[in-house]
Image (tube, rainbow, N blue to C red):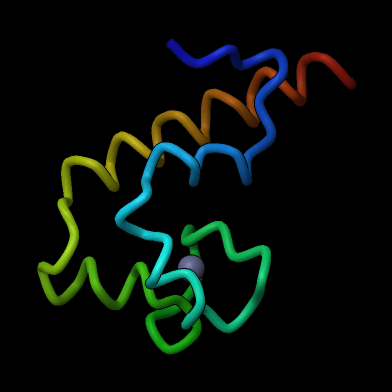
Length: 76
Ligand SMILES: [Zn+2]
């Protein structure tokens, strides 16, 4: 299970080792692979091509969102 209290959004990527190689092609080093366009994000590009699992990407979004929510609550 993820420990959301201590999770850094970038750490979520550790659970997606198959994205490691792709990440190098993202335009920005700290790319979250969310809400970016295909030209800037290699993960989105691979997703649209069917090269990475949509289910896993959806799960990533879920984890990321719940993390952000916790973070906001903590610092509001
Ligand atoms: Zn990206």
